Image (cartoon, rainbow, N blue to C red; front, side, top):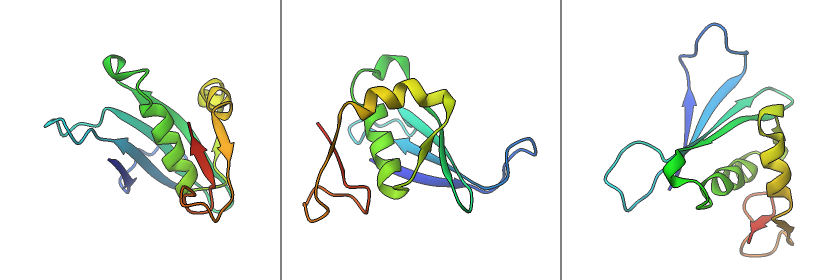
Length: 114
């Protein structure tokens, strides 16, 4: 399950804009903590994916890919910060553009991951 959680009480040193945690939760685990999390900042004219973290023991299972896909579906024009540029380049090699009429299209993102 992917959960979008807006952060209303942010530290003073954070940039202005709306801040979101995008969390990946495993439905088969009784743990309430997310296995992976993405940090997103939403400005009036731009959306940035600032970071993607996945617990070490759960890496290489597609959790980061699912987080980025969910972010792209919610914010189609999302930009990758330098912190995630290498990860994003790897993901872009996995993305297939599909017609918006497809049942796999998510919002206006129109991305499908293999």
